[in-house]
Image (cartoon, rainbow, N blue to C red; front, side):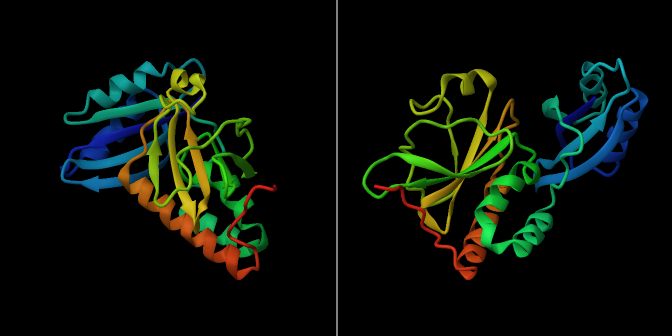
Length: 229
């Protein structure tokens, strides 16, 4: 079974090595490690680990908290094999199929941000309704208004708002959205069960959404996708 462990490591030499040793002592195999953010408080890392058959997730928490100064932000099951992650992989995919830029962004964004799903939404010019322009595998059926559009800048969205399905709040869904070139077109990403999207992830999404818009326009695809009358 694979798990995604998000931790905050203290800014001290040997912290990562100590954590890796502690995880290894409980039988966990580290599959990948990515630095999400660095700051005065230390480094925020996403660690994908595998436990042997019968291994308990609680042992990962025990191991992590056994390392002085380590804080666990989230631990959740992680689907093995979904590890494109690096932004350059998305850039390569966009370059390979520029005429499908919006579809490529929706398909790969969940893997880049270790999330559950992504959709590209286009809003009409005369009301607050939106339609799904592109979506990733496993994206939910969306049938609600989007009062947060048009969207001028990347932002986190609260699942407690009236527009969000109540089950999202029950699932601990974390949401992030960014405009794709035009305020009436946006990518929405959902991360069931957390962890919360960091500021650095907001910046990355804004960059990738802007790049997608540039690729779409250069390929002749209109960056505005209004609703039909």
